[in-house]
Every structure is written in C-alpha cells, then in structure tokens.
Image (tube, rainbow, N blue to C red; front, side):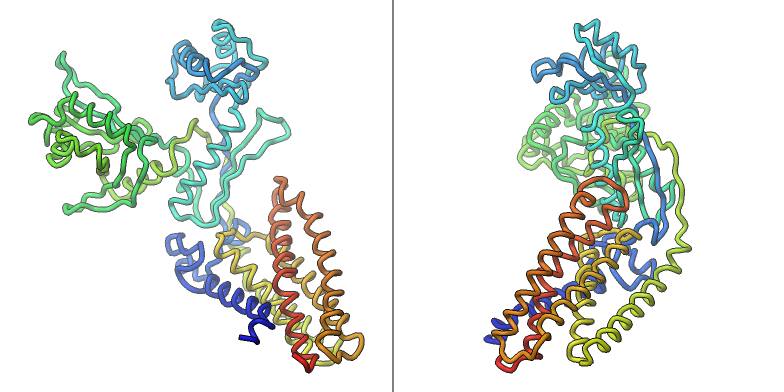
Length: 509
C-alpha cells in the first residue's frame, strides 16, 4: 500500500492507459460500437469514428421553410390569440404558426408571402418592424437538435449537424448535415420528412360517411421502446402515453364506438369499419382493427393506470422509422435540401496507414534524439512511453465520446505530442542539471519545472479557448483536442513522468 501512496500518479496513468486501450480496441465498448457493426464492416481494428475527410460520406446543405415577422408585441397572454388569427387568415394549420414572446417574433412554417403576413398582422392591430424569409434562431436550434437525435437513433456514427450563417445575415442561414460513410439518398430520406406521427380514428359517422379524427400525436408519448415482432411476426413499436393523453384516448375510443362489439376487429379501410390509422407526415403507413384485449382494457378503465400499447407497422423498416420519429420528435418546419455532395474515401484509405507509419517514425526519431541528448536509456524510454500514453488516452477519449476525427483533430494531436515532449524535456533538464542525491532535492527541482510547464499550459489554454468556443469550422476541432491534451498532460502524464524519474534517479524512494 505504501508504494501506491507514493506512486499514485504512475498508477493513475497506467489505469487510464489500460482503460483507454480497452475503449479503443475492445468490440462493443467504444461509442462507435453502436453504429450497426461499423467496426467490422470497415475492417478498422479500433472503435474510432472518422469524419468526412477520413472516411468519406455525404454533406447536405438545407434551408428551413418559413416566414418570420420581428418586432411584434407578443406576450404570454396574447400569443395563442395571435397564432390562431394568423393561421385562420392565411389558411394554414394552427401548428404551423408560432408566436414567441421572448423574441417578439411570429413565425409561419409554410411558404407564404412576406406581404401577406405583414398585412395580416397589421389588420390584427400589430405592426411588425420587419418581415423576412426564414425562421428564428430558436427554431433552427430545435431543428438541429431533432435532426441530430434522428441520426443518433439510427446509430450512424460521426455525424454532425450545425447551423451556418452566411455573409447575408439572418436571412441566409443553412443547416448543414454531415454523415460519414453514407450516401445522399439515405441521409436525405432520414431527415427531410417532418416526422409528424399521429394515430387517427377512422369510423362511421352519423350521416353515413366515414370520419377521420386524430386521437394521438407523437409528442403525447412519454416512452418509445425498440421495435419488436408479435407472435404472428408483425413488427410493432411499444409506446406509453402520458396520463392526460391516456384519459383522452380512452374517452375518444369509447365515444367513437371502438370498444363496442361492432368496433372490435372490424377494419375494412378504406371501405369502412373501425380502423386505427398510423400516419407519418399525413400519409397512412398502417391500418389496424381495435383488438379485443385493448378494448377490454379501455372499457374497464385499467388503461389509464397502465397506458401502454403497440403501434403496428407493415415492415420492420417502417417500424424503425416510426421509432426514430417518435423518439426524436417532429420538425417544427419543413427543410429543403439545396445541394449535396459525396466525399470519396479513397484518399482516406491511403492516409490512415501513412499516418500510422508517420507516427511510429516520429516516435522513433524522438527516442533517438532524446537518447543522444541524455545518453541514458532510463531517461529516454520513459519519456517516449509517457508521450505515447498521452496519445492513447486522447484516442480512448475520442472513442468513448464518439468524436469524429478529421484533419483538424489530427493537427491537434500533433500539437499535443509536440508540446508534451517539450514539457518532458524541461522536466528532465531541470532535475538533471546537477547530481540528484535525495528525493527532497528532486522534488524541489521537479516543482520548479512543473510551475514553468503549468504557466505554459495556462497560456496555451487561454489562447485556444476563443477558437474552441466560436464556430470557426476546423479550427474548433484543433483547439478542443489541443486543450484536452494539455490538460491531460499537466494533470496526469507530466506528474507521472516526474515520479518515474524520481524512482530512477534517487536512492531514498
């Protein structure tokens, strides 16, 4: 136990390296293990994700359909009234109009003219400062979050969704979607639909015509499980309702006759009967009868206490699409793909092995130079291994976090290795200026070197922080990796290297 107390920094470094190696190489451990067998499919022995520059893929640039009026006197008391009047006057669905008290904006998520929105607001007694094409920042942030959730739910690793503002200002925002290892049609079909899932009741009306009424919406589901198959092999998505939605659903099914003898197992869509229609973006994807088990649960009132049931689909693919859209939520507005292009991975396939060879050559060159400088393998070998340990820890973090490595991140790795070796040389030079006779003298010199290293690290972090915070493209990835590497070095690897030297150079350890 005394050894661990005196050398806990070395022990911490070893634990981090082992854990990072497991995350990096063990199947099913890293974040990219969720990418539908990506590791096995690509033949990559690691769990690392790669960006477009290293693995190829598709980049889509999209715009959001909508018109926004800014400078409107919207309050929590009148926001509902404004949205209702706008939707009625412009003949759009109520759900496609949003009044925001926080920003004083009114958005219409359809392709209406700016003049018609201005006229409608002025007729209602509101005078907007400006009316423009596009939507608010809050809506764009929501769309970015939902698209990211959709992509994550499908297990596509290394994807990135971001809001880009052009030089034209607020009227020229683009949402850029980058997905490595996929083609444009796959990604476009995933993100372009709004993802509005509804459950509609189709039943005979009083005047002899069939009625279609929405009884559930996707946002009323509090839990969505993975798609499964029933005993007959039909795919379904298990869902659970909120208490309020369950109460209303029970009342609607009873009122519309679905729990009566005539309403059970009696769907003849589109020719009549009692049908529950599953719709995605207004299109019917499945129709089913009311099952006797669910009907009994609804009639007895037990459904409210355990409000869970199944949404059935035609195929497992359709069930997965329903699950993704239910979990991610519906997009507030439609998006239009302006352009897309595919990045071929041919250069990446050549670049990866060359990067490995270059890294090994650099490590060997550093080892030779350090050996020539100090003339002692016991100084050079720990220095090289410490520098390599830092790289392994960073790669393990990238694997666990699902970071999609691109050229900017690799540049950050190079910067970290360079500063790391410099710091280790500073430590070795400081403690070896004279003969080290005791641990106390070593610790005094080591603390002096560590102060110099800490000051340099603080300067580096301060210099890189603006690049890490601001949306400056590839510079952000470079800054993030550099900052993380410097922190790992100062907190873990440099102190551990000091303990190694202390044990090698002093006799009273």
